[in-house]
Image 1 (cartoon, one colour):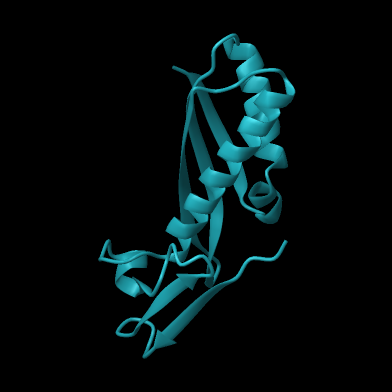
Image 2 (cartoon, rainbow, N blue to C red):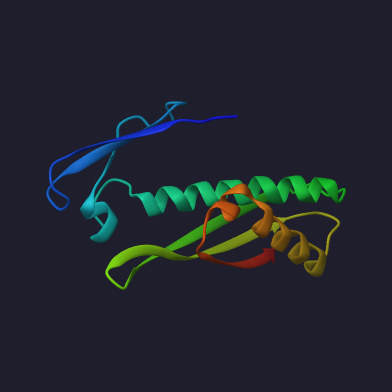
Length: 140
């Protein structure tokens, strides 16, 4: 499977701006830029998109692993907090913290935490990232 996304940029880093699009059209010319990345301005940014991708990937991996254990979630809600820090003379994503709250009939907190930690380690986006990935898993 191959998926495509694209980005276009015009201008300098601080004054310029760009758009991001996905093959499916879910994102089509979504604006992004310095203000959205570093100053809370409008638009998206790479870290936000990585967080969304990681939260989605983790939730799907968790659902699959729960199914392998004979469990089905009524609901899985995952938030990813992506940390971008200056390291030496460059910026890098150093940490991602996943917080998941799930409603899973027929399981206990220990089993859920074990499965969630396996999903954290095995989701394809987790495997892609070199950042430290942490997790809080809570049953609702």
